[in-house]
Image 1 (tube, rainbow, N blue to C red):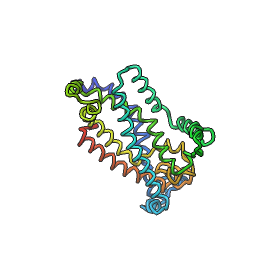
Image 2 (cartoon, rainbow, N blue to C red):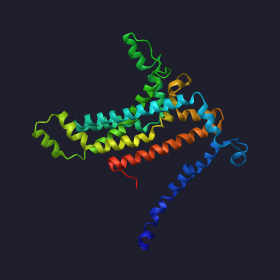
Image 3 (cartoon, one colour):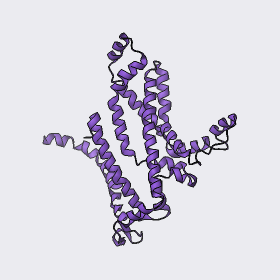
Image 4 (cartoon, one colour):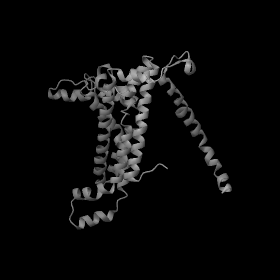
Length: 298
């Protein structure tokens, strides 16, 4: 046993840089949680700033726009979860029916490509595409006599643009996960169904979907842990004061409150509130993933 442990020592040492980075950038900043309970003044630091208990939380919860921010976060994230489940599932089922290998692989590559691009790049692309004056979308709908639509400046359109663009960027990744799950289905089941005269729709309903039900449940339950993460990178690169009413989420709210308005205590209180709720949701979803899909981390 000792010889085995000693022989694995180089492998454990390979983990050391990653552990150090996690300690520095993930656990080290958690010391700043104390700011949520202080009237924090940067010049005084953690140790000399006045401790005020729960007053930052009381102040944040009493703000008139905080319920709106919570509502926007929940609405956008829930719509993303629903669309992020059905779109890749539908596309993967359609691709599973394609028999031309080259065409199937080409489509997979094209839909997977946006996953590797940052929202800084995609944000600029979307701003150009959806521009009310020169954007290709408004140029096309103007051919039918429709007035230009301010997709990124209209509160009624902005949340749906966020959901659509997020699905466009990320559904390729989930599609590949579903396609990988589809390869685990026994082909003999389809052969037996064909012998019984089952149509392709019947085969999909009675064989394909039940065959990947655990993967569907797993991805759905894991996505529930991100209910309060509506996508800071995406919204920060695309929103403006005109759409704060429908597009301002917790993360952007914390950014403006802490870094722009210099209200460090209340901003940290909002972030801590979100972290606690997210911890509860993530713990619950991992339990559900184990309960219904037998998925475990350890």
